Length: 520
Image 1: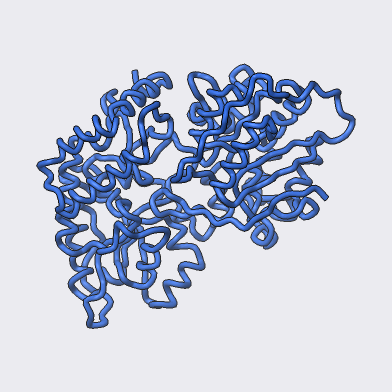
Image 2: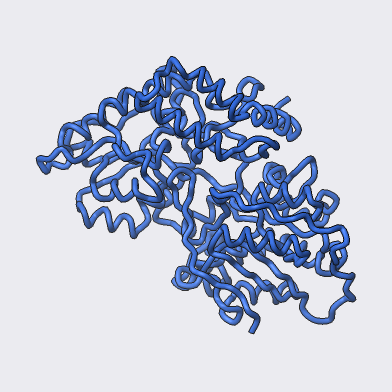
């Protein structure tokens, strides 16, 4: 039996305190940068051209994930091998840091996997080192992939005008404000539709004993750090998403949220909200899903969060166990003083994962062709349903074009996403896997969002993103909590541009987004 690694894996959605669904995999960049791998020597051996094999072609694939069964229990591997004439050897790593270290070692020693996941930092590193196959001239062989993921996704795997990776097809937004409707009813209030009404409701949830226990032990708003305020930023036309200020185009000019004219007004309103005492006092210390647990326990009445962490059955049961009458509802993005309303920004440049092929595989055209066939197959009419839902007649049935899951899908399908190398039609997939949550899925997806472009931008040399992000977070917290007056906001921007080299980042973004066609 071939040795593979199958490790239990737990992933958190950073989209702002959101959580990746079971069976909805993806990659994220670790907060601690890994040391760059040493460039491979030009004399490093590469596989010689292989004679055409008579048996299955073995393909070694590595990525992050978990829950992968042994090969004899892996129905997806077996079906793919049968359809493609392959012997897939998939290895998954539970730890993002462990995966990065292992990949760096393999790339530096020319022990290349045939297909492997990378983030943008690794994509830049390995393409600069000449280790990745330039897929640009092979796109005619990957037409099903190109048609499946779309032109914007192709750009996500592009570096210096060349396609070095295949990006998964786009995901959709999950996050909105949720509000305790039973608290609103008790206080004779309606769901907020404007920023002023949001402030009024948040203060009432803090001061008017909405849970009726005679104690002052509730507050209005909680969330994952600044994520609690994304919809407020949006009400002033300012884009924030996934913990960072967004880049977006307005009147064909690139705007960074920190330099948006609406930013000072947004910060002033958020300061008014925090000054009222209506915000979770531990907001900026919340990590993981602490804000979710506070909402479940009845400590807060408004939360900015993804729909799975409120509406999935296990969380609904937790909510009802604390208070059977608790009722959480989604609310639309609130309007700001100028009439703008956005639930948040949404980065169309980000992707759940990128998959690259080593340049060395050019020396083995048979194996390279099999990798192409695999990518095309999981993007097509037979392979895409397989890696989404499993085996027809076993894990699901069809009623016309509608997929009807069997009980076996729920029992065995938790790892199928590991084989979704080019993604899936997200809305259709979620509506099958989470049919009961369909109204929440559709509500979140229909919310107005500012189209952000950060995911397309690579950091220039000399720009330390970690230091700049830390400085931004610290100073914004000071403005929000009155530790630094807003009259010093321009001084903050000047320090950011100079001492933090943010100007170099903005200049790089301008050039890269123009090259990709997002700016004229």
